Amino acid sequence: MHSEKKAPFKTWVEVSRTALVGNLKTLKKVVGKKTKVACVIKANAYGHGILEVAKILEGKGADLFAVDNIKEAVLLKNSGIVTPILILGYLELADLKEAILSDFSFVGYNKETLGKIISLSLPKPAKIHLKLETGLNRQGVAQKEIPSFISTIKKAPGLLLEGISTHFANIEDTLDPSFAKSQLVRFKEGIALVRKSGLKPKYLHAAASAGAILYQDARFNMVRAGIALYGLWPSRETKIALNMRKKSLILKPALAWKSLVSQVREIKTGESVGYGRTWSAPRKSKIAVIPVGYSDGYDRKLSNSARVIIKGRFAPVIGRVAMNMIVADVTEIANVNVEDEVTLIGRSGVREITVDELAQKTDTINYEVVSRINPLLPRVIV
Figure 1: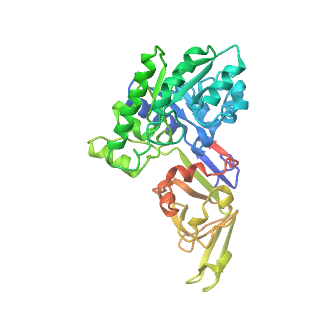
Figure 2: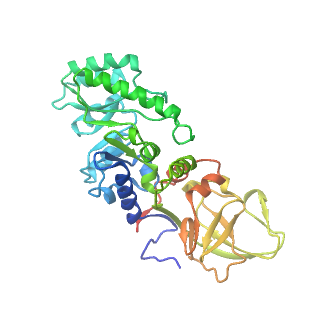
Figure 3: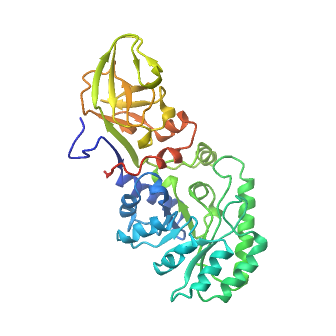
């Protein structure tokens, strides 16, 4: 039965403090004491709730918090977070002054950004993580451009090279490490150029979750822990690659998504359910209406394919997922009542619906499933 004391909402997300802290401890053990862990909490902490996750992990081993934009950074600062913040995404030129004066670190890869910082002549330097292009071909400074960036940084007192970074293109999707290794070679060459100039960056970071788990030589002195922090594997290939090395890693999913039964009804054989009449009852059936839909982030592709858990038993989702409602067939489940708890993602009793199950059914990845859960839904720390 749904507990009003626990979460008096029609749909909500539960975030496990124990799982988050445990996953961070596990990852810190993997990378070792000499390597810092930046906890990536962009995109509302991959759907888990940016403030909830930050407050759970502050003081629990998070060396930095990595976000996408200045809005996320300001939200953390204004909420009392004191852990250093690194902005990974594009920082608009108009926001540079606020970022610098707020003591945020940020990636740099455009001459326009450096020029704007120099023109501001602020009383404190910009803490830049120079992002090197090594093969992903998104943000980044090409190797031939590195000397020019070094020269600009060395001449300008307003520029502090705090870090050097890059991002792997193909660790998660393959068991062949050759391209990742070629990126590592290019990254190390870039680091050597910077160090030869006399600059001494504090942080060197290339690995996100998969790289941190699989490759010791990709860890340098900091890694960026994202998806694994939340107890989800970067990919099936990542887990296979680790198993091939006779190693294992226990990650515990930190997110559960719940709702409740809003109505229980009986329908006759042949009656249809939902828009488009895509499901018809093969027998006299009992159905449960659940107040969650695609506006909440429950993908429309889950129509007639997903399942939920009610009273510890699986119930198939029938008919189309609507904007604010889904329907489940509970014919085989006894004593289903209004406001019984419904599990959309997570464990109930001995049964579980995983994020990866929903990702497979919607032909996407676990990252997308959780990050698309509507940020307006309540996040409840459990």
